[in-house]
Structure formats: C-alpha cells, structure tokens
Image 1: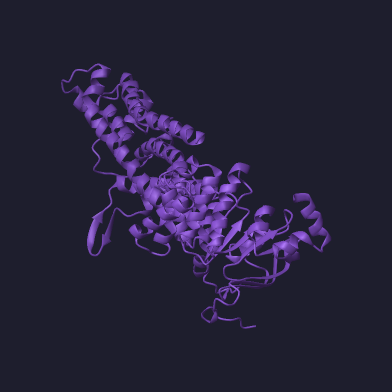
Image 2: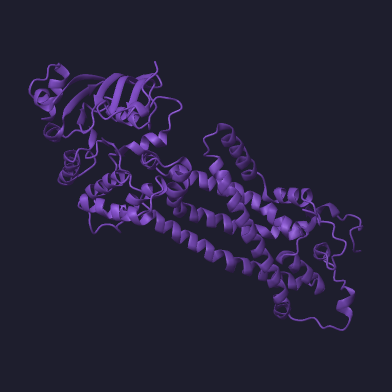
Length: 254
Length: 277
C-alpha cells in the first residue's frame, strides 16, 4: 500500500494517524491493533490501567520504539518506513516524559536553548530571547540559571515542556508527565498544558488525571491489554461508558 | 672470582639489557657487582676520590637522578595523552551501532587490558623501528619515545573501558530525551552524554595515571635512560658500595611516592565528592 507522501499532507487531514498498530516485545504483544486519528489543534487523552501499553503507544509515534506492524503517519510521514528520516519526524513532534529527563549538566535556559541551536542551527541570540520568553510562559522567569538539581519536580517538568516547545513542534506528546510529581505541583504543570491546549497546540497525553481529561480533552481513548476498548468525547465517555472494563476502571479512579 | 663466568654463577638470572653498544655505564654492571657482593672498585674510583657518605652521594647525584625522574614523568604524561585519545576513540567504538566495529573494539580492549604491561613494552620496543621515514624525512624514534608508545597501549585499553562504563552508566532516559529533540547520535554522545560522564571518569582516569607513572620504571629493563636506569648507573659509578644501595634506591622511591601519593589522595577526594552528589 503506497501511503500519501508528506508533501501531499494538508492540515485538514489527521495530523497523527494510527492504523492497526501492533507492537511486540519478544513473544509478548503489548499493542494488539490500535487505530485512531488526531486532528490539528485537538487534545487527545489516552487513559487506562498500568501496563496496558499506553507509554509504548506514545513512544511509537516519534519512533523511539519501532512498531511491529501497522501504519503510523505524522503529517503524512510514514513512521514505520525503514527509510524514515527520524530527525525530520522528531522536529515536528515534541515529547515530555514522566521523569522530566532534563540534561543535568546544563542550566534551565541552556536546556531550552540546546536543541534549536544545535539541531535547527538557529542563531544563538534569537534562540535565547525565545527561550527566556518560553521560561516566562511556563512561569519560571528568574530560574534561567538554575540547574535541574536545584529545581522541584514541577519546575523541572515545566522546563522540560519549554525545552520541547523551543523546537516549535506541531504535535506535543505527554507521557504521564504528572505521575512522578507531588500532588501540590501537579496543578502547576497541568495549568501549563491547559494553556498550551487553549492556544491550539495539538496534544496527545497519556494521563491518570481524570479531571484534567474531562476538562481539557476533545477525545478520550481507554486502552486495556493492548486494545482500545472505549472512546468518545469526555461528556459521553464519563457519563455513559458502555464497556464493563472501562466502567470498573472509572469507578476506581473517580 | 668475579664476572659472569664464575662457576656456579647464574647469568640467566641477570636482568635483560637492550643492546646499546655506546652506553658508557651499563646497569648490568651494577646489578652484577651487587649480586656477587664483590668489593672490587672500578678504575675511576681508585683515582684518588675518597668515598663520600651515602647522603652526600645522593645529594651529589640528585640533579642527574631528578633529570631521570623528569623522563619518567614525561613518558607517563605522553603515554597518558596518547592513551586517552586512543582510548576514548576505542571506548566509543565499543558503543558504536555497527556490530563489527563494536566487536573489534571490544576484542582490542580485552587483549590490551589483560596482558602484562612489560610484555607490551617489549613488543613495542622490538617491533617499532628506531627511525621512520615520513615524506622523505627521517624521524628518529629514541627509546623513550618507543617506551611511551608501549605504555600508551594499556592506558588506551583502560581508558576505553572507563569511557564505555561511564557512558553506560548514564540513564537511557537521557538518550530518549535527546533523541526526541532530534539530536543525532553523535551530538547526543558529545553534547549530552560525555559531558555528564566527565566527572565520573575523572577518578578512575587519575587512578590509571598513577599506575602508569609508577610503571614507567619498567622502561629501565629495556634500556631507556630513566630514573631507575640512572640510579643503577650512579650506584655503579660510586663503586657499587653496598651501603649506597638503600639511599640511592630510597631516593627513587621517595620521588615516586611524593609524586603519586598526592594524585592518589586527590582521586579519593574527588571520588567521595562525586559520590555524595
């Protein structure tokens, strides 16, 4: 099947498209045929019990994890293509991790500035202006010269968001970004993501924050044991879940 | 009753000396004289010079002996420089994506890490020519330069292992974060992983240096004029008096100790500091 070429992609088509994605680690099948679309500007949340393959799923989208079978397209780029230009794909897709993963030997400002300077080859002074603005946007003005070890978890996570945004991605992936945070710092990170979503950034989140999903998501997917068992907009998803597993999960977390 | 032909003598036990016909003072003489315990004085000692007390002998020869020590330091520093450059390359090759390169680098590291340094030294001394011709220009390779190459081989292998271990010790999440920012593999290594490793690599690297600095005396066995060689020659020049043995070699011992002990302490301090962070 010859898929569409990146130059044929237009913003009215799904920006991220998954068709029957399978992923196995050895003989263990983590993803058993996942399909969904994300449109430009949409906020999509993936929820589900631990070990249901959510993190693997989101890592497949920027080719950190190769898929076993199926199709993933990001703006028309075939992610599963063996000749994939990973760097071109990753310039379009930002990613934020559960453990922040800031570069510990660099200050907050340097963390944000590194990729635009060294990957995109942009002018240092121009990047610095933008990086300072981004840190201010995530409410970290004044922390430019702090090293990650000197920042709280919530602050580190917001630096990580700013670092990802500095690349001006078209899609942002969030992999359980609040799971490692103290309850009181969860909110400051969620506020940042909500603002991002309100500005029109396409966001794909794996999350356990049900209230956040209900308030911010355009569409929610519930995965269990490698398949999507239920999906829908928050209103119908939370009010009238059809699937037994979904109902049980929701009754436990809500 | 002197000389190697003495019946019952065991010349096979004598230290090996590289053929150096022009050498004026041969360490073998000193060893031989001491070994046999003879009191026969060489000709120049009989020419009127009174025997100096041991400490004065050491003082008298200290400038020459310290020149020899400077050679040990120079050999160790150069070997460390060469070995670190080659070892970093080899260590990174062990982390390469290509399986062939990775395996070859691994094999090279294992070989040079698991053979005696002295054997490597012998190999280099006899395999490397005394001069090389580069673009029609003849470059002489004196013994001490060859010895430097010889010592840089074990340094290379040990540094390679240090680099590999340090890179491996950085969590894979750092790689993931950098990859998702579209850094290339090379950029990730040089800009993100290795700078984080530098601190971790410093103490073991200094450890290797202290070991190689002490090992440079092995160069005396292949005839390089370094401190131990000179000490033996001085001993012979002073008539091989047994009472000079301890002061002269004690002086060499002291020089190495004063040089290596601070390195050792500093290494330990750095290790503790990096551990607590």
